[in-house]
Length: 158
Image (cartoon, rainbow, N blue to C red; front, top):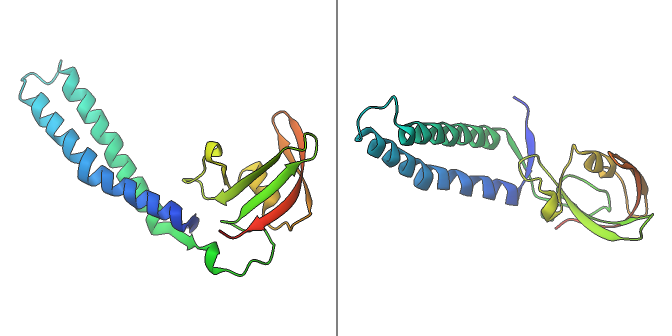
């Protein structure tokens, strides 16, 4: 069983989702199944089949979250000395060398990744290119639209 790195915030969000599934969504779907059963013939009861399918999704996600938590290697970068090196959990400020556009990304685990929130998976092409680098280093990232070149401006452990 391979350990997966996760940030403190990522673990907190997973635990919140697990609580919501167990305490809110699971009881609602059980009630929906009971209600659908009371309507009689289950073969042609669309409400029953939809509720059973939803129950399967909920139970699958509960198992998945429990597995992630069991394998979690919690990394809290705020408790580490900032050496300027990009590591899992660090926030990286970069500049696109073609457009001069500046941006920042936090390097996170698979379940936390969300590009809309600037959270990138450490095994993504961008994540792999950044890990281990230092301020002022130049990196090249292969993207579907071609190679992109960036300069690392700042590394924060926040």
